[in-house]
Amino acid sequence: MAKLHLNVGLEIDFHLIGISCHLKDYRFIWHINNALKSDFCKTEFYEHFDNKLFFSNYKYNIDNQDVYIISNKSQGGYLLKKTKQIDYWLKVNHNIDNNMLDGWMDEIKKIDDVLAITRIETNKQKEYFIF
Image: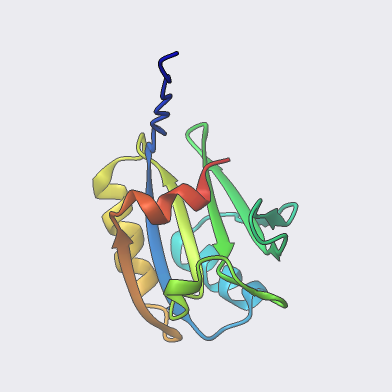
């Protein structure tokens, strides 16, 4: 009998931005809300299915699109172990205007305690943020 193989391709339709910053999550979000004139609010912890760890999660709705900031660190470890230098992940739907996203990145860079900010283009890392 012939074997059938099922290849499932995930549709990854969002931007992922890594942010390095040594602030605690509540202080970082306060700075983000002031810089972006946004209203990120804490939601349920993000639980990753692989490692059973819980990560701080903040949500903001703009133009009926949800934007998330997720901590890369929890008390038990990292969401993405290969990117320990990243402290927070900004997950933005592709429907958000690129000019707006670039403006957000510029404003986040101006926060004194932000060390670095970068776009993540690899789908392997983005797979951790599908929910």
